[in-house]
Image 1 (cartoon, rainbow, N blue to C red):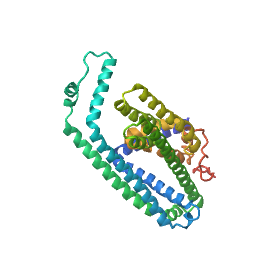
Image 2: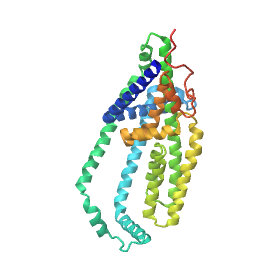
Image 3: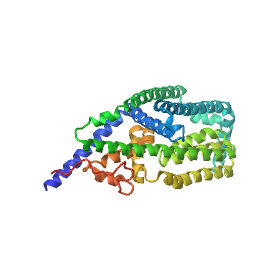
Image 4: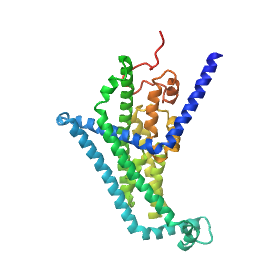
Length: 367
């Protein structure tokens, strides 16, 4: 009876703690999101620096500061290229707006005829029914604030990344001084190594898969002559970081644009089938083949984490859900009381997959 009461009390305390932590994460998302993104950026920088050392002959001779500098320059180049692509496409959209306005109205009228509506809509009617209900000033204000917020977040992330890279040099000394017991220090190192291996492997392999998917999708869209194929390809690659939903949106957006541009059902359906096939083949064959069991997460847990972190942090939470949950499983697996939770969250119940070295849980038996 006492053991049952103690377990019930532990469950209640754990649920209360989870609610408190969730509330803190939700309230403090403006603070926590840049921190987590900065940690992931550091993982990418360190991963690229290690990749440089793997270059035959030249790599091992490159000094560490130069490797990190080249990694940072590479990331900056990719970001600058992405910004340039977006800016150029926005300008192109402005130029083509009158043409696509007429095409959009034509598609709306075709849809009205298909569904048997008596009066085909016109831009005047649409403006009276919809556009006049929306004040342009109400849209400009939040948009400007959103762009400004993104810029400020990038500056904060850059600041965090700088200090994290500086802290990395003394991390080993800090770990040695965490405890007088060498076994505790070794176990902490083991947990951190597991997190580093799994997170680094996930980011590296997932990025490679997304690049392949973006290139394949771009080739398909370019063959059809879809406008802004480069932009859609980049969007598909970025959205693929979001499990399940990202694949759906990666097909939806370019196909929706194809409906406006082409209007031919045969062309649209063919493009839809090809983009969906690329998502299916890469997601169900190439992705599992390269990723293997690196994250060791149940598909249901991935979907649930996407819902939870998306609810807490919005769009950034959707992108961060998988690596955060993988880290959480690693940490839970190191404590006897929470290890069963980690087993349930894993893909196959084997928590030793992806570990840096085998080890036992943190809580050691007494005596």
